[in-house]
Length: 104
Image (cartoon, rainbow, N blue to C red; front, side, top):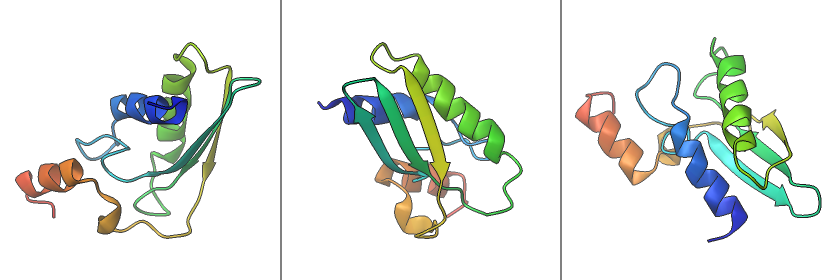
């Protein structure tokens, strides 16, 4: 497993502020890049809506969760809107969970 894959797994610990689903299964993480030399991580993240009132809270949670990993020294989270989020970004686990709650 690569460092990026391990870091993505760690982000399963970060739940969406409004839905009982983590940011990975919800499809909010568009990319994660780790620099070996200095332990810096860049994360591209989106939200289900531009007006999400919990954006700052969730960005903070992503950053804080990654900083708990031994190899991570710093984290930059960039909020991206292209491509726009839609239900196709959900993982199979995310789709199943939302269907169970009658959301999808």
